[in-house]
Image (cartoon, rainbow, N blue to C red):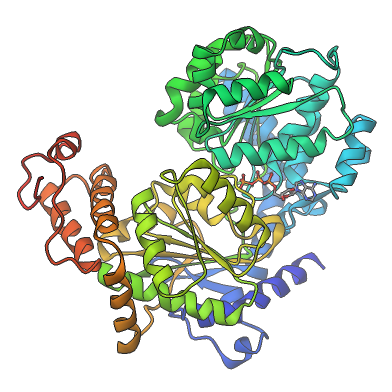
Length: 583
Ligand SMILES: Nc1ncnc2c1ncn2[C@@H]1O[C@H](COP(=O)(O)OP(=O)(O)OP(=O)(O)O)[C@@H](O)[C@H]1O
């Protein structure tokens, strides 16, 4: 009954979705009552064409799976002629895809669990006990596909959809590998055997928490986190007081320890397994230099694991920076399947900037009214824009929390912990929450303004619909941001009509915006300009950029855009652009 199951789940979310985002497709009364809904069976794509999803798509995917299995040997033969090193890797990847994602294993039908139980695998009794205590019985698809290969000692690059258990996927086998090494219980500064790199502090903390769960009965193994935002000396003391063989870190702070903590580089010489969580993010230009330095500080003879929900081709090209030539690429997202979850409905809305606050308010009010257990994340383009949006929405008496890089680490941790535990909350966030963070039961993800790229769109959306649950996503764009839709046109994302905002709501929103401090607006304006200036498409034409920034300024109730410090304008390369005021 797997496909029927999928249909039921799709229907259950459709009525709420239809009311929150009235789509251009008409929703019949039967659907509003929770019965058969054309939205579940067919969706429109960006161009308004009808795309089959739900049962029709499952049927088509099944056919494609069968075709792929048949054509597997042909694909390998064709690749032989292309590139010898890559051919071996690709061949294994395709074979795994066919085995792990086919019929019985459940991946095709949207189930994230495989049929393999942990106790059917070569996992130590201590780990098995911990896995059981954590409530895990069956492996997820990605865990079942990667565990045996990691236990063989191979380097692995793994791609699996968001919220499908990649963390346990790399932690469990890595713990198995290092637990066979000789360890002394009370050694003060033991060698670090497992090093996990994460792009954000929240994610590093979360990975360490999961590691502690799995280490429950491995009493001689300890885990520590180094993440910045706290004093370096504090972390140095903590590492001394709590010996650890497993270290979870963000790149900048790990580099700091390499340069400033006595004996630290010697401890890293003990690394047997290196993990890059959110590998594509860690290998992109922002982190590349730090990661290269870290890689050169750990032994060449090690096992390397790279995991992410997105692996763009460029990342495959440069994965040799970290991995051995004969690494395995394990892709549990089948070719032709979307990188996002079918049980998450995706909508976009195009509206002028001066309507964005009113639309946000309208969508949130409806969502809150419909779902008492609402839990929403709103992603904004920068930290300062996040702060502004949080302040406006707080003025509107919504239950708002705010998280971004300009908050102290203690405030970030507090908000993150509260949001994890609670329902009935709206978290306004910058991209610090975009990747990896596992907040259970998020009902709606709203992205305001274009995300940095396609990958970031997928990761942000992936904060909802985790572990096979339903979710909703809305991307709110200005008309001149519409081009971004071209990068996600293969995903099932459909247009939602802009809601009619009545004049009383408009007045309420205007008053809320007026109450926000001038300083917040100035900072948001500057940050907004910086973000879009560095966008390749929008930042190309500077006079247009200035004009759009003026629109943003007006949306904050400022007819004259704020002045920007001269040195900042210089850093942005906008010193002599007409229309910008300097201070
Ligand atoms: N075998 C399992 N059975 C049940 N739940 C599991 C299993 N493995 C992991 N989980 C749970 O699934 C949730 C999602 O896992 P995780 O955060 O590792 O996903 P992810 O694939 O890394 O997501 P993202 O791509 O967003 O980083 C977590 O709450 C985790 O505890």
